[in-house]
Length: 303
Image 1: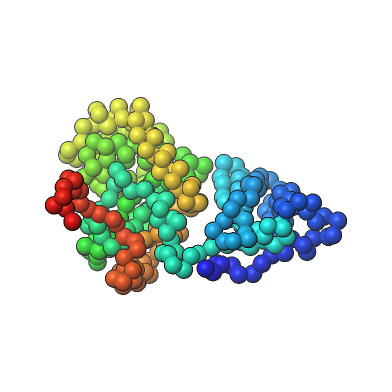
Image 2: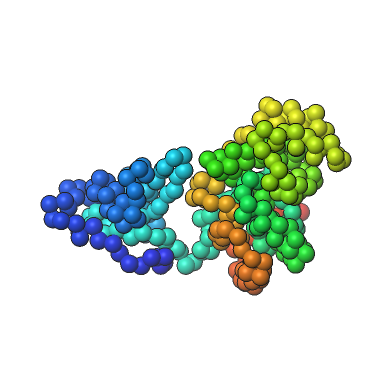
């Protein structure tokens, strides 16, 4: 095993009279972390109780930061005597380094494109009102399947940033309504709403979406309108948001390429190089990609 950050931060550097009275003084740790990360007083900090980690003699302590509806988490590892603190990620070299995030990614009943069972899976957490997402999605739509027609499967996940994008969640609910009614139409909706991004407001979103439905084929606009009005797909969007938060996603776009976290816009040449590297890696490791795609009836004929 190795640590992403090998430098240990010593809590014992604080004045002697402030040393913890127990194995871990959570008040002292909060003060230390605030100073370490230059956290302003307005940010709320919550230090969890220590819990066992995968490393002998180290305990895991999760620290949660919140401010104006936004949140961010950090993981620390502390020695059992509470004196030394390590900030970072612990990896088991016998496993895929991204296994923890791969295990958290759920792609059932999620809009997708590409080949089922592909060796590379790209999961994109995006926001329909986000300008950076618009540019990254355009890059992916123009290049991904044209360059890798059989080797990549892409999934779209909703992560509307409601604090700064007032119509993003409603657009995500509408997108899920489209997907529920006709999965093949989702990508048309996806491209359309990013193209119309600058024209959409909170007030006109529904009319714009219904106009999209009426101008095309294979969508029932009355059914779509009812779905939007009743927020019938809000639970699906909320589940995607919860998944993103469990993965500690705090910006859009955030992509997971076979579990590798990629935050922000990536130019196509960079992304293409990462995909090619992963394809080469998977030729020998086979520890990521999509686990697919066969359902067998129980039978002694099955090997």
